[in-house]
Image (cartoon, rainbow, N blue to C red):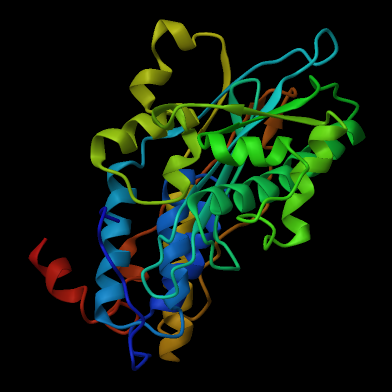
Amino acid sequence: MQPGQDLLAAPDNDESIPFRQLIGALLFIARLTWPDIAFAVSKLSQFISAHNNTHWEAAKKLLQYLKGTVDLGFLYKRTTFDKEEVKLFGYSDADYTGDKQDRKSTGGFAFFLNQSLITWGSNKQPIVSCSSTESEYIALAATCREAMWLKNHMDELNIKTVQPIEIMVDNQSAIKLSKKPEFHKRTKHIDVRYHYSRELLMEKKIDVIFVPTDDQTADILTKPLLKGKHKIMCKNLGLVSKDQEKSPQHQNTKTVIQKTGMALLTLMFILSFITNSTSVTTLINQPVIWRPAANPITSGHNEFHLVVKFVDPCSILTPDTVHHHLLPAAKAK
């Protein structure tokens, strides 16, 4: 999505467009391998029941972006858990009144384990914030809940983490509000549940640290960014291309999760949903998306192998299963 692009709910829902099926597939990959589209997918999913051709065109623009960044992947480096503590830290950010319809803000968070991204989220806040400080404070409460869940999960795996967990915030007022227990006339209306961060700070389970806006990695999860800054945020998230993977500085890398396989799975999900929505069956049997392999797919404990079998697209892509808006472009190519 482009900065300044406003999407409004359509008065009449266009059921002829497979918008709902496409968003379902995009939500799947946005939560697994594509954090750079988390905000765009979250925004588009708000129009599931009120979409028209404008929202469909915006979703197709997102597919074009996915095609252009299919060679990006996460870069994970090996860590020896039994010899040292791992550092768990996160970023919290919010876009004040980003929604032009109900004026609600969007919050986002990203957590890293020793410089490797492990979880992220982008969601519209449930209430209207009266100030940017309040929106950042509400986003911090959601980030703290995620931090405690990750900490408990690490304890179950017997992985020691550095305490307290550092959370980076780019709003000085929100940081001061979380560290001072007294109430002020400008903040006394904030719901009690959003003061969860104060308790964790007093128990020294977390530590809220200021970070400049330019270094706020969660910024990409709260609003659309310009191309230059978007690339910088993707790099900060740990997304690298195949060329960067082969560079000397990444020789010790153990695993790189590529997005190509997820793109193929997304295409399969879209085709299966579209086929079901048109109530037309053109194949004798439904295409198999996943089948157990005859040989084990793992070797050792650090390497993962995935074999993808490609089939003739003409056997799946037929005039009965593809949306009519896509046919002219397909014929032109």
